[in-house]
Length: 190
Image (cartoon, rainbow, N blue to C red; front, side):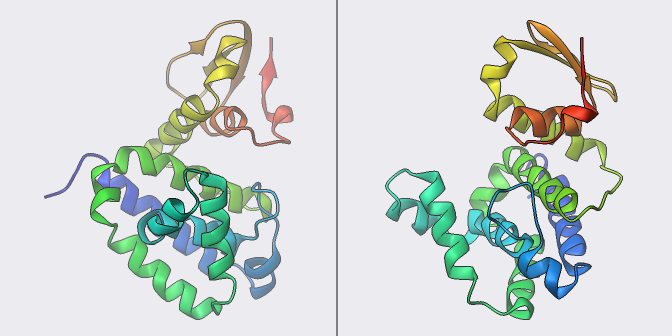
């Protein structure tokens, strides 16, 4: 049985794997990302931790940041080929809880995919479901901004929020709402 958005989640996970596989060893190990202090390998480990690192979140006693960092720290000793082998399994076989919540996790996956791509100076054509998920993730994580700003996607979707109008693609608006920096040039403030 396939859950809603599971196919889109798998597709986005496979796209992340393709992106990370194409990185040089230097980019993989120490390339910049939009996630401060994390290289692409760290972002990948964090994404995989959603399926395999739930115990780290329990040990962190509710601190998502501490759980995330514990997962990333554990992965740093893992050679690239082993991490990539595990990532291929992760992409193809999401955990049951992840499958059930695929509509939520596609946003996290797509946002972090863009964190990697933008950090190393690459781009991609973002599929519609991923662009929608990035904007949804932004609304969930940056909802307070919607009290001061009205975001208007220029590539589909409906306007949200109130206050000063901000226009941009679903991707850029979503990343901006989540708190990513350096995107203001791609936004139109009215």
